[in-house]
Image (cartoon, rainbow, N blue to C red; front, side, top):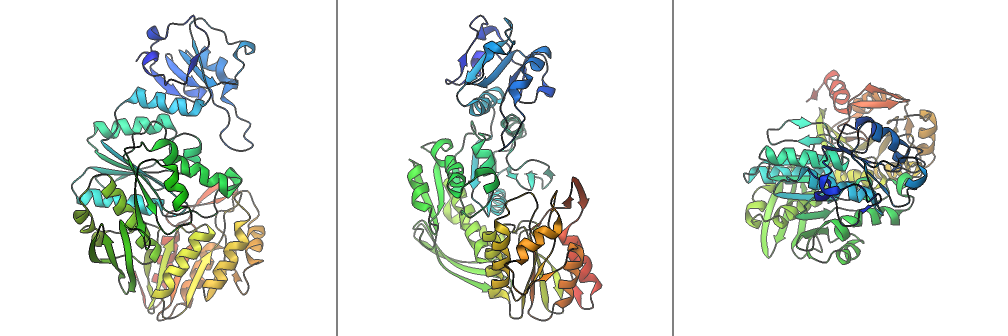
Length: 495
């Protein structure tokens, strides 16, 4: 494909001696090691705070490997880099990351007919999981992309990043389109939005779940974190698309103002998808929903009020993408939860064990509050905090856990390079009466052995993860397997 056909308007050619109409591009990459003859190499600066890696340091190497074009930020001093080459197109852009994404969109061209995206601190994975099920039940070839990987129509899962780099993303979208996939839902992480990884995706609808403290090690402030997520509506969703917003969060008005098109809102204050009532039951939650003026009672096989909101968000996205409201509502009682999200591991002596991914203060608060109405005995929580991440949330989570649960065990999560004892001490400083058990398997076994009739145990923090990061090593560890092993070892345990 000729370079002239790939370039968005904001890209400037520096060396005018190269004819862009004659420059053939055979591939794209931001990794100098992956450059092959005819490739465009995007020389991008580091994407994380404190990063010392700068793609501009590898321009010479990319040219030596046969790069046909170099894309770099406007502030790149090409004249002093010794890279002048009459056969290589030198291009700059004030937003080189966005430019690369749009170039990738043009290079790979094909995208599935309907694409939706969902952002927010918590619930993205569940919303994506639910809407993929809704679309599949309505006869579409549907795929979800996110934390759990690339979930394909046949039920198989292909490993993937939450929000892949734009070259990988657009290559995957083109492949899905060729394979007959017509509906895709994507989790849009704040990192991915900030780093322009979703630019160039042809969105039909986008949703926002909620906002709470997370990723401040990257964004610095909660305001910057929200700004990154708001970009999904202010910059990426076209005016003829539809925004699906949580009507019960403080950020609703700001998000609606950021988007110039139509809004569908959900929640107790949502006129389009209005939640009239939600009653916990033994098998899930019964809701009364007023959807665009029509009232329906629905038995959701899901525990927790936050899951009700995730279901409503998914329903809103499906409707925003053109599905009939009544048909969408008719699918909701068939939905199943995400692995590792409020997943029932089994029962012991009348008590139940749930696995959940909650690893932020807001998520932990939500899951414990959600399980309280289902608990007739004691609510028990086992959790820890990850190392090399936002330290400020540790005492917050310790306080919330001991405030909301009857018994709390603080244990190790993914300590990474930090000393596990230090992490636990920072949690325990605000967790009055909590027990300290360093070994996560031991903590889970101890908690399972406490259960009696009406109790609920929530094992939080890792959810679907199958490894524990200690130092630079990933050791096999699965909360679900450990919990079920502990349950099976107990008299009266049932999986």
